[in-house]
Image (cartoon, rainbow, N blue to C red; front, side, top):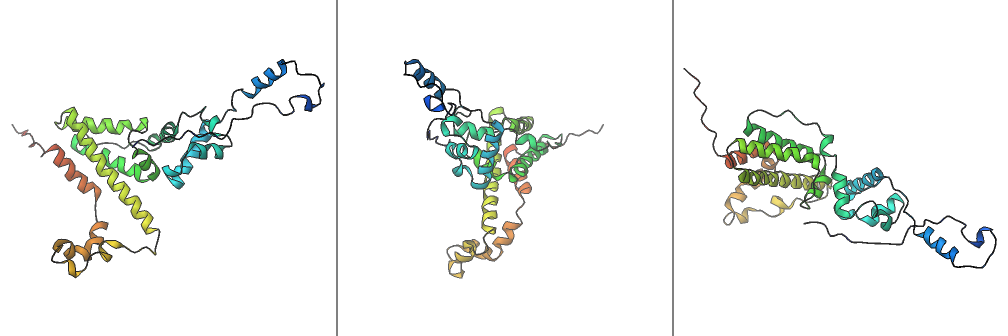
Length: 263
């Protein structure tokens, strides 16, 4: 799921000085072949330097407002006042641009104090990941592309793996457990973002269960029909922390019995 990069070019940057050549008011002399070479060398000069922070800030703003589909090298180049060709001298491709937008985002959120118990630590670090990304929906969309991430966020993965291993999983199974938890978090984030968009449209009709379920479905869908009137209430009372704890208990198995410290 890596984004396809389209190499687009709308021309080369002008680097020559205005007024070069006879029209600038200098002596009008025949071209001896050397002046043309000098002009060519000027035209192929180094592109104008673009502030990297401005590139990243522009890309982040587009992502926040329009999502990944709205971001392109051509779009960023236009908004920073340059050409796509010149932008490629600073950023290799769209993947690198996305990585630059992610860089430093994790470090902008303070690390929480984590409990000593590894099972509780695994839950706490997973919830921290969710709460952080809940504030950054555009980051979730970038992470959904697959192998793009912020290196500063890898401490979360390390904590999760260490916690899982401390609870008795092998390193291989710890990776699988982490992926399972990430899928739970990602799914909840995607659902919440969609719910936010729907809530912003008061005219939108809720299809499920309102428009889809009726008493006529009782025989074929008895449980759904019986819960239809309470479905919204049950959905709104959903507690991710409670459900993640159940997932973690399923991944790690039951807690070992407490040691008898009596004499």
